[in-house]
Length: 238
Image (cartoon, rainbow, N blue to C red; front, side):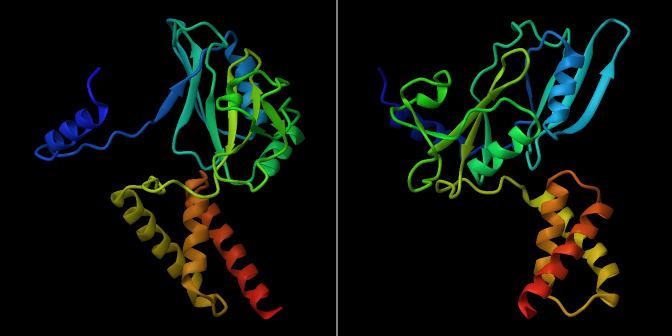
């Protein structure tokens, strides 16, 4: 077997002379047996419905995006030959495993209790197995706490708590996208500033960009940013 480290160095050296083209994971196709039932389920999760296109030849594609996600899921009819329910280990990264689990339960979703792995790979074992240790990791160590749930077909989703990213794992936003968001934020902040109380501009910008990343319109994001800024002012003067 070849040394994988040598292969990696060889690949890196070859890439140095070629312009790197960004390749962003845009959507993951999940196999379902009933598109309307799946649409109702993912809508109940509170995910954003991006599209529902049906065509005369029977092809239909439905797309949802989880809150804050840069990647979407697609399902429908005649969209994949995979068996319904055969997608497993679909990661959803959250900052607070218990809060995320409670939110799903509040939507009526059958979700496991939060757990941590007693043995490597326990997160991929069925709920109730002995290698799943109840409760989050004792120190809430990043990448160590989980919860699971499935859609009506049995496609399996895995919540993983990530509080601190490993080195090299950034926000995932490219320079052109961030530039456009900052330009857009500047425009809306300029409309807000003349009548706004004294505040730190970065509070407003941060809230605006976070709202836009979560799928809100520029107008909705501007309202969120104003509310956040007022809350920051109130907190500072309390």
